[in-house]
Length: 168
Image (tube, rainbow, N blue to C red; front, side):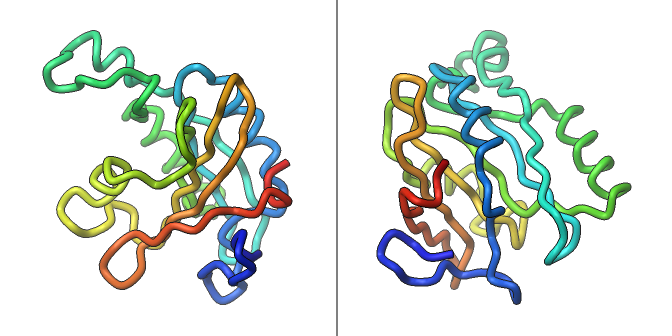
């Protein structure tokens, strides 16, 4: 897989940070619009099959409960429901899968891994999920228009755009 500029994306030994078919991710994120959608891509080992697992974005509920602590709504932020997230992790472990990628959408904005995304993924300067990449898709008027992939490298997140041919 290559970036929009033709350079290979950083990857594991097999080089695959994403499945060949991102259709399930695209459909989920488009259906979540005008709110951010979120989920994970699970993989059975380094070379096994991929599985898309959408997660509920509970950011609106957090904002409603405590708007001071959670000033943003699901239009500009996402949060996993903790019990659901734990269930996904336990199910993945039982199936011999690992979390390979966290994905989410940016509503009517760029497909960039934003400074806020970076702060959430590495609040203390180290990634909360080591070895996990982050896929961001821009969704405008209910349609994915662009995507980027970020990965922790050399002390920070490095993001590269995906080529339009890689987005269904």
